[in-house]
Image (cartoon, rainbow, N blue to C red; front, side, top):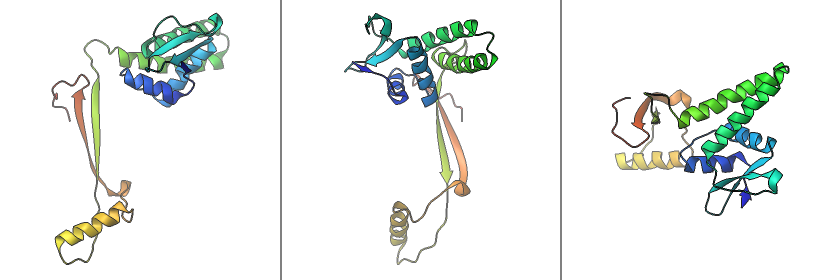
Length: 177
């Protein structure tokens, strides 16, 4: 088994479980685990486990990313109760709590809400002039130049954006754009 020490590895495992998190969120969870003498490990099949460092690194059962989020939230609550007099630290813990609650809400949307995948397509446009014998040659010249980086498009070339919304479960398009 390999200990998960980088946020990148936790992000990868989380994505496999349908949980999408940032580098900061993953680091936060790892920090809460390590700070309470636990670690997350992964086996050769990609299954994650929680290791208790106080029990010689024993692991009893598979551990999900959701369970890690709940554990971090519980530890955060405990730390907030213990540190009521340290206002600066309490503020940090409250900020962590907002992040952990957001992760949990992603896993369990409130009644009447569901999770959506939103595809964002930005369109950029630029007109260039070339000298060529045919339209096909003009296309090839511009394509070659663009492929080599001769032409670059940036925010100044932005002409539009489109949002395509799909329920995450792969259901029918709900018509939102």
